[in-house]
Length: 255
Image (spheres, rainbow, N blue to C red):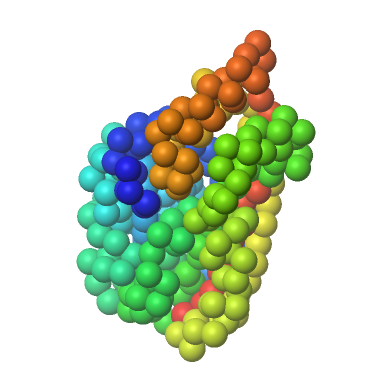
């Protein structure tokens, strides 16, 4: 398994990954500053369409999902039947979308895999004047539940030198406000966050872990299997696990 390649993980990703706080979606669409029914949106690095479907459900004029990985895109198409979403193969650096075609461009839990500078150039190209780019993540808020913190601690005990690419609370998110503010292509950087809680069955909780690429790459097959085994034993007998997610979003306007 390679960093950023979700081939083979797409089914678990589609079935078990959580959504994003709905109040953050409301705030983002309000920030665009246009009637929702008139907004053309592009969700880049759309994965299996978890965030894409959130946008489509709000009644936007159009929603395009751009995803480079064939496995993820196929799951997205399968799980988005009936939604008004157009799926395309492409990447953050080369979306294949026309110039000035979007009022809103988003990357949900995926910007950390992209070349930041090239992606910003591409988003500037496809956004209309004063259009909005948003990067967002939905990490677990482990402080909200001691059980979550205990399980998370198993990772560093198994591999003390682990350095996560991004869990939404590390990596690029530590400096994203500064990175966007330094870009003359964008202005008015805005940070948003919101929480929502989900009751997950043990199967759903473990399934969400199985969909994580970065952790599997860094731990390797044996340590990752050991982590899943330890986690499964720890939650055995529980009907549900209450998991709080923190949606963090950075919005910036095309200059």
